[in-house]
Image 1 (cartoon, rainbow, N blue to C red):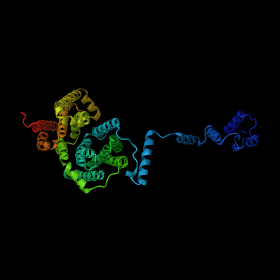
Image 2: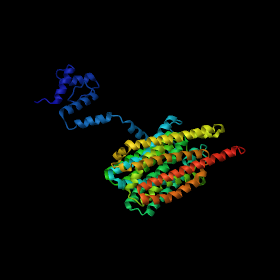
Image 3: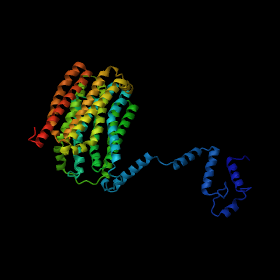
Length: 526
């Protein structure tokens, strides 16, 4: 009779226990152990766990068909879930508990308030990822489907940004400063959903008026959905900021932006279809709102009063001046791109926006410097004895803008252009002059943003509306002339000229405002 591996294991165990004939000693061993298990193959001196281990070893040694499966099952049973999986499982359980436990607002909050360092970290990260979405998506588009398709996506994104601004309607700052909740959060939600529906309708009407074909219309629809959801999500993130949990709003914005970038990139890589990737982006944004942003705001803040149509309508009136200024500025900034769409091939949209992204970096950098200090600037301005200090801060920030613009220009004159060519897979060598002009335009735009913020601190934001209207009229005429004459060069030059005009007019208006304030404070002064 041949000896099997099973017999070898049995005999080895018997020798270890001092039994010469394991088969003969089974009955006595079973009685001696009292509670031990005997299965006819192994000594009764072993527990169930030991027998299971011996059987697993025997199967592995015998090379049986179930040996690898048993090992894999054991490893899966013993393996602990990773931190991401644990977090997802915990969040999913919390969502289900809220759905079946009486509603989101009935649940207790789990995250702390007033986490200043985390507020700054996550708000900065969320803003940075959100700001980098457009450049990254255009790079991915250019590498995967070429400049022409990337240009179509670019102009759709520009239009979508205007739609998002219309959806926001300038309510965020008003909502965050409403500490006493004179307007209920439910009314803020109603106002934002109405704005979102109107903005999306305007976007679809614009696509129809432009006579887009099915492909371009689908690209636009996907991008518009994403930007409208971006605007609607802002009201929930504003609620978190209102509850002193800004870091949760930053997490929400980071997750939504990173998710959209990932989904768009994967969809475009797999399908090489821009319409499919754009629609996937819109669906990903909707999923982030439904599964993360809205539930997070409802779970982590107090239950709101009932909505009021009167309150929601009053928001349209109160926030109209700020919305008008923001929308007009972004429309002025976008006019050269809209003129290009009817005059030049779509690939030039890509070139224009790629050249603009370093300029956008200047704007974001200056925003990170002065926006956290706006409350401090307001308090300094409120003290008439500190007006000189207020002026020195303005001069310092304007000087910083000049320095950052100079550094960016030096970078673009050196390794910047080769780096852009590598990232986009296109040659930008012939656009060196345009790149430098666009950097200057970025510095001018950053100065405009800062001066407008200062005018807002002085509570005279309504005084600049006429300036925006003047510049809008210029932006309708000048790009048409220069783009038809000079092509892409005309688009960049007209953009720089319009921004320079706006900056000069804003500085003049700021000087007039200061004179009026000083005259009102000291009517008998010189």
